[in-house]
Image (tube, chains in turn blue, red):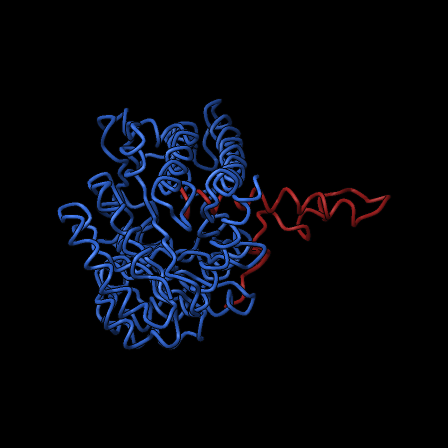
Length: 397
Length: 55
């Protein structure tokens, strides 16, 4: 790495980590989470970037360089469908296979009880040993190759386990190399490290499905509660082992279903274990990026219970100005630039809105510029450029 | 955080305490066996939970 690039990286790392801790850096950091946008910008199809991860890494680096991002995710197209092809997950539709090559991959959650990957009467099995439940019950249901326990074994079952493991090691090792290249070629910081989902969201997204869970919370809330409590230590452990060993950048919790239920459900079933995991991570020196997809403003009073600086509050469709007013003293804030503005607005409009956010929410530091949601292929490159221009013009302290 | 049940242990699929009982006898250094067992267990556990959380 050249001395200039090393200097640039160090400046950006300091800028980004200072803002993460709700302090005032030299200027507002630009940290864009971009998925299929990078493919379109770099001239790849969605099939290419989703199935061939090196192309996704390379397209991200091109964007990081061209748009002068201080930080980004090495690959925001979170599913490598090469692994899916080997392990056999049935819940994805893949560009180039079931979808045209220029459509983003799609996840299909269970739609009804018959299709649910965990049945209504299986809560006790999950609670008893979540890892064994996943391996023995869940995986045979979500993979077209993995066979259930006590069934005749198959060659394809054995190969799915073998190749799934190999594929995952291959991908994660490649991610390590990609983070190094993002640093050495672009001087850009790898923005996050580690994965977390709320126990309640795991039940909704991957086990019962939203519809089934919506019934469970009324018919068997004590089981839902116990399942969340059983999952919590495993999800905490999973987040901790994947977190940044240098404790500089946060784990991300991708928040999904909490806004779709009334307050009594949120308070009893979603919040307690979510809060517990975040506090435990913070005790280990690990911040959490609270990536609040949709509008989580109505739950601000709960989020405000978290320890100071334990999270960075990411705003999607919420009111970033209200979020700043209520919790800006405690937590750094990121995001809040509307994705539809990036898709349909003009560069001048984007710049004006970024200026407003920077000069209000970012007035005293602790603000990181980003879109509200992950940037898809509908965003115009000139608008992404306008975000950078806004940071450079208005974001210097 | 809640206690896990039985032999279940976050971060491990088959905890050392379970596997240790499967040896007919251990004539050498148990710690060597434990270290190498747990090193791969962590990766195996990560695989299972990554399919749930990452993929």
